[in-house]
Amino acid sequence: MDNLGWVQELIEAPDLEAMGTVLDVRLRAYVGRGSPADDRLLAERCAFEHEVRRFLTRAQERGYAYPVRFPQMPTLWIDFVNQNKAAETSVARLNVRRSYEAGRREATEATNEGWAPKPKAALPAPPNAFDPIAMIDRLVQDAVAQRVAQLVPNNAAPLAPSIAPLAIAAPAQPTKSDDPTAINSNRMSSLLQEFLRPASRKRQHTMKGRGEAEAVVQFAIDFLGDPRMNELDDDKWKLLDEALPDIPNRDNIPREAAKTLFQRFKYAEARGWSELTRVTTTTIKSRYWGGLYKFIDWTIQEKHYSGPRYTFECIDPENLAPLPRDAFDDDELLKLLTQPLFTGCKNRMHVWQPGGYLVQSHIYWGFLICILTGMRPGEVGQIKCADIRTDNQFFYFDLRPFDARSGRVALQDLRNLKTNAAGRVIPVHPLLIELGLLERMQELMDKGEERLFPEWDVYIRKDGTQRWSQPLSKSWQYAKKLLKLSRADLTLYSTRHLMADWLDSGGIAQRTRDRILGHASDVRGRYGRKGILDPQIAAKIEALEPPVIKQMREILLTAKNRADAGELTILKTY
Picture 1 (cartoon, rainbow, N blue to C red):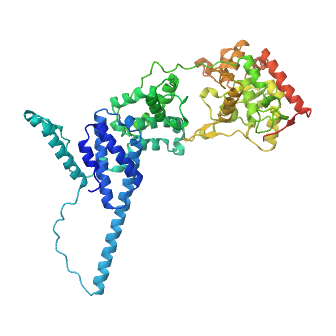
Picture 2 (cartoon, rainbow, N blue to C red):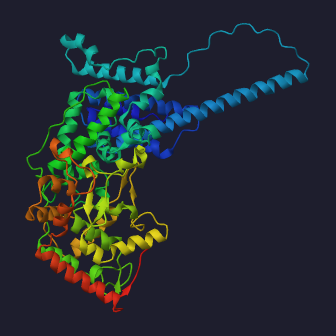
Picture 3 (cartoon, rainbow, N blue to C red):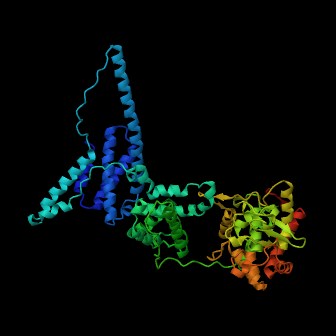
């Protein structure tokens, strides 16, 4: 007991914050030393573990948000308990080994001396083992009782026992709920790991979106102190609900203080909001609420949480309204297409610097296909050579998940689409053909290559889902900064709004417009021909050529003709 000086500090602590300070300092010291190596140190740490658990329980009962005051305590607590569990296993194994070796030594000595053992009489019951937890409880309880006797008048003495902490009852017979493994498995941090663990093949589709939920669930763990799921009541959910709008975006926050949502939350709490901005309501509703709902629904389904599903509703008046995207202006589009990527660049790696090479890479084609078809960036990256088809009059991108006329296919072989309506056919714009897209397709097919853009890398998220838009999105962010396009509502998705504007200007029917862009329509829109577009409608779409496309044609074909004439050197990327 010579190392348990913190017991007196806990006795003298006037409130929960003072107790938390003592425990936080001691946690750091214990975790820094690593797992204990003998029974004495383990007993000391188990006594401390008991006091921390009692502190956490009292803090939750009184609504004291200790993670706000001691942000490292939840992480330290998990590490501390894991060290104790590892030590219990190693110490128990060592004790068994020692007992075995001692018994074997005694048996060998008895055999050598020719001694025949006699039946042993029943041994008297051993004295009670030293219990540091019970001793600490007695110390704390006696000390509090003495302080109450000093501070409370004599006529209030009968009330003193109710102020002292309750004594710990004798441990009951082990039950399923007393199993430490079962208890730990119900803590949010353990459940999050299970939630993110790759599912079996039969349940792979249920993993979609779980990786995106990880950040906000981890925020809940850090903010609430890693509680067990069944400890979460309406008051705790409400605390979390009110904290979510106070998470700022990353702007003006140092990188080391913006690695997690909780770090950003603490940064805003410490520094104020004078230089910070709040996230949009779309982020709160879609990412934060949506991620928590996905996690909560999973815990209910897996019977880890027996409470009702809380309804999040807290929005701060200073949270930003969502920003609608807008189409490219003509001058913005032409400013992009006059860059070296399209007119002559330095080399394969430096496509935004002027030079004597024409590199028709996946980035080159990605921008042009998005502009001239209205495809999503992620759809472009998945295009296969066989997806470019013809009806002997027009060429089409066939983005349907599979050809229904050829029969059913397995779910695992379907195209990765954003929505069910994303499966569609889109005419290949004549300008793409003039720039050599069909030649690229044929060369790749001759090489046995399946994908139209084999150099386009897919990004794999932690939950196993794929994101195909990454390369083009990064290039757009670089180009936007390079071109100093500061308009906030201008994004890569503005290419889809541009195509929608061209379709509207051309008088294309709403049903056809929805099919070209892959938008969900009403019930009537889901009936009718599912295959290639009507030739007359396809001809109208191909004939869409507002003045800006004529200017685009002049810029792009000038560079292509220079390359064909040898003025620019063509560098292939496949």
